[in-house]
Image (cartoon, rainbow, N blue to C red; front, side, top):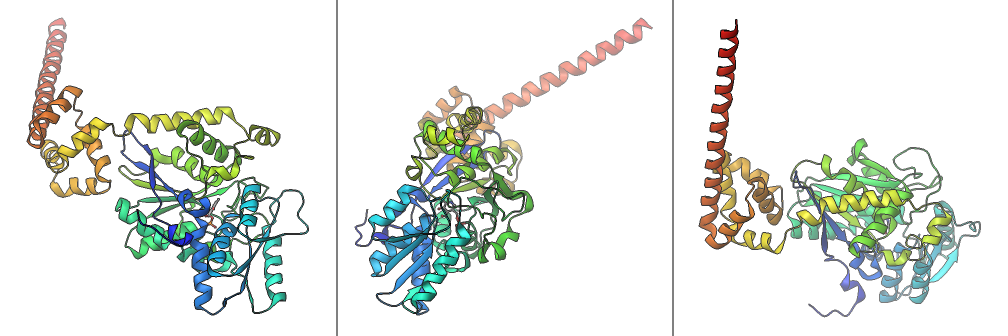
Length: 448
Ligand SMILES: Cc1ncc(COP(=O)(O)O)c(C=O)c1O
């Protein structure tokens, strides 16, 4: 591992966690753990991009003052970047932001300004933005208001994320993410397009949020969505058309938080509520996606920030947000799609031996042309492809054992034997059926 001297050098190269494999279609769901960035969130990518862009455009000079409206994660990212590059930073916030984000910003020397009319814990996105802009205008040229909702550098900050996905997975057929400003989802999608990847986008927003339409009401998911009275901004205006209507998903607080809590309880993985909404969308739709798809879900922030809200039963109960039945359903989906189909050490051993030979063997056994099989195989990352093929070929544990000892050449033999046996069984069965019909016909004729 390399040694770095700036916190921002730790941004990116975040890991992937395989959450689910569909047992029939072979579709795999990966979580892009943006939680592993400094600040535990994706937004630090765009915070850095917005500051660098402002410097390039001479909007921010040495010793300048960044003033931005934030629900927390953008502020955390800007706090780091401001520290590193010698700027003052004022975050305009509301009481909706979780305490740990506010405390962390303070710990990094950020001045917090609360919007005056906010006191009831509700979102105050538009009031925050108006105040941040006013403070910057009043101060004059030393101040800079990045305006994340109207700043295309926001999305550009995620191009590197797309490069990481392509390097790690080769292809991303479906990208699922929560939508607030749209920077993370559309910015990553733009990066994928630059790399010639055709990716279907699935956007998720809280029920009550207005970017995808539908009735507006308060919601408790944090850092995502667009509350009534706010404008989702330039990125959503420009790119929302890239998401098919049927892929614009609204997820309730109850479902989003249930998913986050289940991942914590079942896997020991703590993710935030908006990431929970994206996971919920993925788990409930995996069966509908084309066979062999590679699906990536953006995990935009970590659950540690929500220990006194989403993961606190008292806070949840006070707001009537816990649904144990829903949590059980999600846990059931996780088990159905995960444990049994995750490669076992034995699978990996088989894969190691079979990687180069199995596709051809499978193709010849099933009369697939090489090109059709390769197209199918290319839709999946190598291990999933092979495990899927192994399962499709229905090798028995005994045959897998044989393959393991026989090495690569043995695979073809085992598959061929398997196919011959099946063909023989089919022929015998067909014969039996024919004979049954004939004898029944004869019976009928003689009875007449
Ligand atoms: C908690 C949280 N939810 C959702 C999002 C998506 O927001 P946006 O659309 O503004 O990128 C982010 C962005 O990183 C986030 O931190």
